[in-house]
Amino acid sequence: MTITLERPVSTTDPLTLIDPAVTDRLTRRITTDHPEIGTATARRIVGQAAAFIAASGQQPGQSLAPSELVDYGWHAFILHTADYAQFCERVAGTFVHHVPTDEDETMPGGAQATRTRTLATITAAGYTIDEELWPDVAKCTQCHAGCTDSPKNS
Image (tube, rainbow, N blue to C red; front, side, top):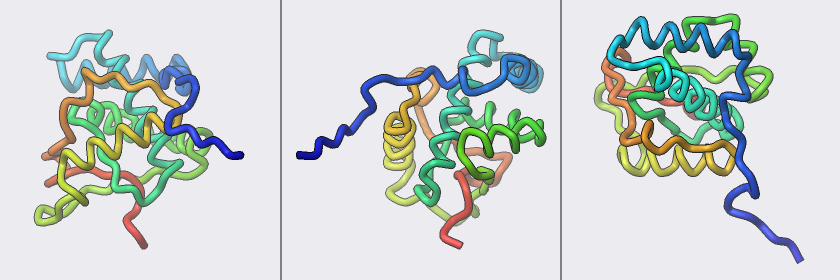
């Protein structure tokens, strides 16, 4: 008999995936770019960005998207290209590309379905979800209409 679990037995704090010095750099970048965000919240954002990136790399082609706050962490990480590339290779096994959606493009099932799919994928990958940081899916105005994970079916 085979038993399949929908969720892992335990979850991992995604901050443990990132070198503490990198976490500190990303936290500073977030608080510099978004002064309304305090240091403690910025650290939580970094952790959730790590979980999002790791889960995205493990499940490519799922059309996952970060929340607006988590997207701040993803953008900060991408700016540190060497750290980001190394993290992706180590944790996801591949580079996780940042793919802005076109202005007229919608995510499969809409924003709520994308949020649900993203959180389910992160949870299935074994990472803890910080619910307060996931009230929505990013509109990602700096990326036109939205941000998604690795390349679409190419």
